[in-house]
Image (cartoon, rainbow, N blue to C red):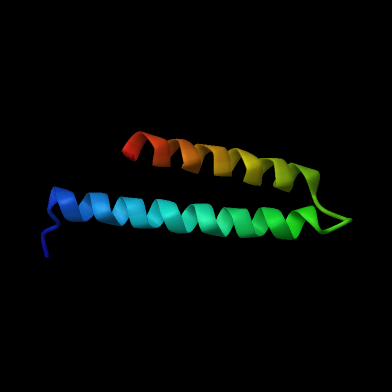
Length: 59
């Protein structure tokens, strides 16, 4: 099956949106955990910023 540029772009937007939702959920869980791993939390914040930057470029 051949993917056309529009289909590929649609999938990229979908994957990006799902990634953002998942990362936000993980951040919310980490924020409420008193024994959170700070390095992991900082990594999640960085990943969220990267994904949101991708979203801004595609918009």
